Amino acid sequence: MSNSKYIPVLRVTQLDTNELDQSILLTLKQSLNQDIFKYIQHNFFQKYNTEIFAVIKCILWHFTFNKRSQTIGQSLLSWSYLEKKKINVIKKIIHCLIFCFDEFFIEKFPILIRKFLDNLGRKRQNQESENEALLNRKVEKIVNFFSTLFRSVSFLHYLQFLFDGRYLRLWERILGLQPSYMQEQYLKSYSHEISEREELWQTYFSLFKLIDSLINFNKMYSKVSKFRAKNSTLHDEFSIKICALCDNSPSMAHQSADYDNLDSCKHVFCYLCIKKALMDNQNKFECPVKLKSID
Image (cartoon, rainbow, N blue to C red):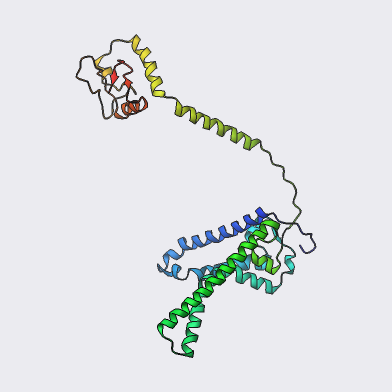
């Protein structure tokens, strides 16, 4: 890579690489939590979560960046840092501290500062509890100030990355690790035939769903049944005991409200069949056999 020329890495490729690295770490962390640490003491992993994960990241860093000067996401997307063979030991150590102990520093460093200043104040003079509380508030303000400063600088650096697309992370710019493709990138031809076909079928399916929601099939079935009823005016006792909508033995049989009237429909219906028919026809439904109104 030292003799190759600089080939800029696309912004989206660098973002995808960062996402891949974070996803791998998250998957590894979840797997350890679910498969190993659930058999240990209940609060062990929660108590030493940061320390354990820092050790795991050190092991992962040793077999990736320390040996190949490349992360897993970079190797998957075929890019690395320019002149990676010339990355010295100091840069690797700084990279290890930033990559492996970032969460540890963020979580533990403010606590260590409070303990150090608190012990230092007690050695110099016996302070009252109010002075200790005041000291803790001052330390908290200092930590919040540096945290806000770091986030502001990181935000400005990210805007610079969006502008020039050279360094995604702040420590890459500080260490001078310039992203570059390992080989020349060629234009990739992409056929839109498959995507167009998929989009066409998706359009057909959406159109079919729209038509299906607009058509009242129960109403169409009842109209067709009216023509069938004209040809058969006589109905035996067995046909009256069958659901006039599904032609099966009725489940939770229901009848018309004016069943006792002589001119009313004597058919029985399944509860679901007659309920759906009344809902689809706005509570105005006629028996498809007797052509009588059903309430």
